[in-house]
Length: 227
Image 1 (cartoon, rainbow, N blue to C red):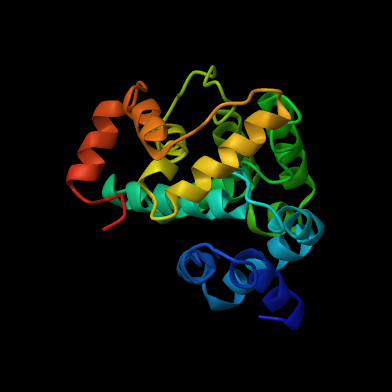
Image 2: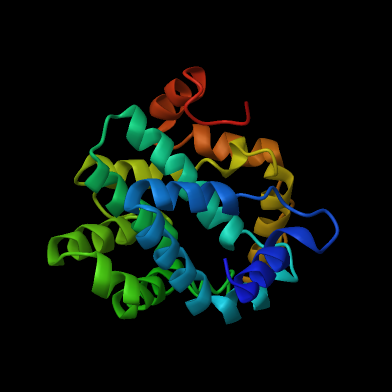
């Protein structure tokens, strides 16, 4: 990892009070598992380099839709994909969809449909898309990203899209859930909504979703959750 990317890692996880759980190593290992050491390193380095400015702007605050959320969702999505016995190519497409689904997020300033449109456009211009995805991969990845528009309104057509939806609801089961709750409060304030958000609120929301039965099973089987 380059010096520049080490600085990004420190900005994300290591230098401010109450630093978050460091998920970057797990993401690095997963990327290399899916793409091999050389391509995996190239993908992650390109991703972090292209998001450098957005990462630095967001890292000085506690927010919800930052890299902590993106990485947590991606890791949980892959655990669920393996549990559902998805193929390696399916896991690759899911990995990239989750990694790109909330990039350049406005943190509550814009409607989520526009956030997702920005994320999809960013993926479309990326070196990763140009060098590591077939035309069919791109369609699959963009469809998965589109399914994450919140409130959920797009019809889910396959298991990968369902996994993305489920994993997007799992922040309440992370060890740093209090940080996610605080970040969600901040983003709601950007919308003019002054709402106190708690861990219990987030769990209640996830467990009242249409995916509550699947989430319960995944928790019981310890596929997801802070074990």
